[in-house]
Image (cartoon, rainbow, N blue to C red; front, side):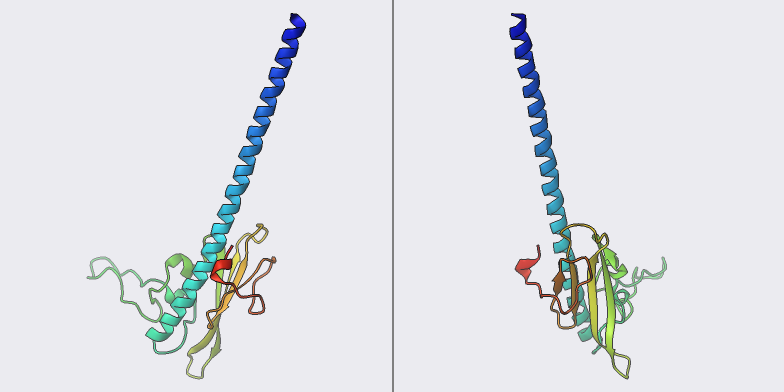
Length: 177
């Protein structure tokens, strides 16, 4: 009888160990799946923010009679006025157009850094073109893409650990992830 109980408890202990191991495996796999979903959301968010910048640049160009902004900060929300002076905010202008939020205007949001560079400046000082990059702030993160766009509005991407360029493939809205 003692041998039977020893075998029984040995099998029971082995079953408990196997169940715990399977539970841990499932939990680790779920965590990896959640992490992958989170990274896919970061990528989609960066792509959409780049689209917002492109749209804001065109709106800026139309609103201020030609010329793109000289910096992302030019599209930031209007400045807050001093308290007790009437309205809370100054009206939008060329330096604070109110076309993008403060986070995006700062160039760093959602795990991505955004770099804007004006190109082709006319003799009158109007910006006739621009380039903008979005790249992961932690470039070693797997599955995070870098993006590039310019005044054409075409967004390009790369999965390589470098900044994207106009020579990389264009991204379709169905290809974000």
